[in-house]
Length: 505
Image 1 (cartoon, helix red, strand yellow):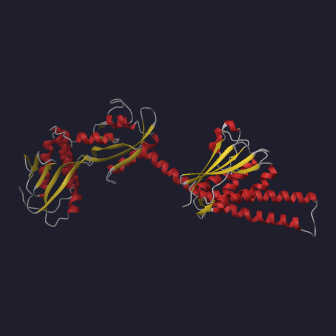
Image 2 (image 1 turned 180 degrees about the vertical axis):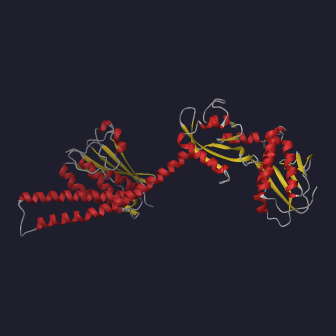
Image 3 (image 1 turned 90 degrees about the vertical axis):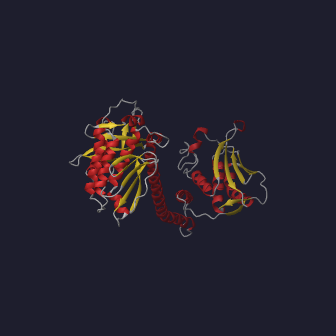
């Protein structure tokens, strides 16, 4: 054996010897012979000691170009000994033990000798398979585990176009074994027409050496006619003397679920961006509308109080209508802006302990005039003193007034609105119950959507359909919930709105 240790061989020489050993395996189908050739090539290239050891240290080893049987792990040779695990399809099948020239950087050696290590891993794997050594850590179990995880192994002989293990890919798509053919051309017919060019470009880039490995994500037609997303990875492992690819292997993975999750993530990001743009737009529009609207309301007020040129009764009535319409529009703009801000999480809130009794009294006082004008009776069940809830006082008052006002507007003359409160564990349940026209049960799911009035757009009661959507958003922002329920049939038509809030400590 030549004990001289020349510098590391050239990259071209390493690739040539690795390809030659793999080509020998392809032609002879004799992994032991191919391993002998690889060992001789390594001794020739490195000039030092070289050993390939089967992973469990109880099989064969190769040293100095001779194929030997060893029961014990070889002794570490003198000099700079380097041990590297050899892998095949992610499984460690052996160990490379080599004596490198003094002063060699291991990182440089690792990159330079990588083709030899890959070839050695491939040959040892074939040698183990040929000897029938298929124990718990064997390649068959590795492939079975990959198959269970939705990943399948393929091997492509470019000279014959034979695609090994194509039946595993067919199984992934729901086809029975042998039903789609046995060549790469047969598999290509399953690829979505829009993805064919991308797959070919990825392969050609790898074949030209522009990228280290091949990767493509494409759609393939499944047995049931739907399209499944496939992630395919591979590497050319053999080339002929002219450098043309002759053998390639890799994996296929069903990436449909991953693609759907990624698409859902992109949709969510797009929705968030659209929501942010909507909030910004509404904010700007609201401010722009408020300025001229306040001017309209201001001049209407001046007309009403102008004693120098007093209005006639008819003119005064018309100015009052202008003010009413302006006030309604201004309130709608405010609700729209609040809703956009709370949806974006940008509405300022001051969480505090809110005494429930005082809150309820204030809200009832503010709607008494409206109830009297509509002929609706306001009722209140006894609320325990000193009960307090967590929330923003102003926003809670806004929600309660909206619920009470709706209960009055959509009621009937002689009807009633009842406000009650119950303590349930650490929560307070506020209920606004009315004896009005009721709500259709099959449309309750749309009640809290913006601009939804459930078919009452042309009715006598004015409304924008924003109040309930805003109320629910505000309550949820305060950690509570708001829901609507039809009254039991024996109680007649009507609706109960239930507001659940956390009790203050």
